[in-house]
Amino acid sequence: MGVKSTISVALNYKDNLWGLICCHSYSASRLRVPFPVRELCYWVGLCASKCLDKLLNAEKLRYRNSLISMQIDILPQLCISVSSNDLLYLFQPDFGFLVVKGEALTIGKLSSYPEAVTLLRYVYFCNFTTIYGTDNVSQSFIDLVFEPEFPHIAGLSVIPLSHDAGDFIVFLRKNQIREVHWAGNPKMAKFGLTMPPNLSST
Image (tube, rainbow, N blue to C red; front, side, top):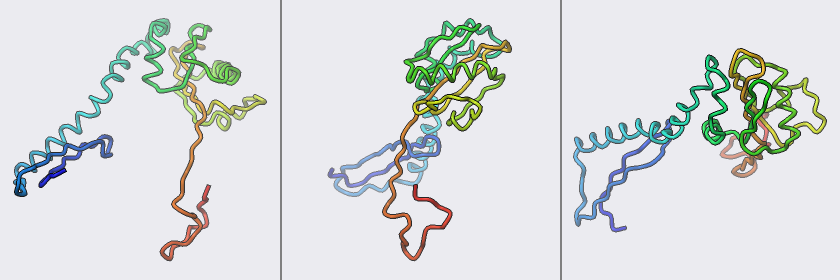
């Protein structure tokens, strides 16, 4: 690009590199940035990194403020006024149910209706009094008999809305296939090292 000198300032978000502030000089001669300026750039990057969390989550914070009515000491009927899109955006589920006084309202577009309704009924009769979550409903609910099992729904979260039985929100997430790509055969010796016997290549 014809750049003679450059200086970069890292922007970190949650202990990971999120971005860079890059400054280029096209002068004929190379430019050496004095130490005080480099120190100032460091603090600018640090301050900007601290602000990233608020900037990137500003919309989530706005949605969260609109969901204060979901606190346990607030009447659960107020939750009905909360938009389904707000709930989906804040908690990032695939779909779910809002249950108030025995009536269930769907949140989002249901996938695998029989599985979703079966889990809804199970959660209703479990009567959770605290927030509960699992990423594997088949292993967590061993007493739940459902012949097709759960090939489509993997996990759920339950948020009680009141001390009365039956008022809660349940969020559901679909299964996701995960692929792990190895850099070659994991059982092959490399640089004189072999895979420990207790590690699997699957």
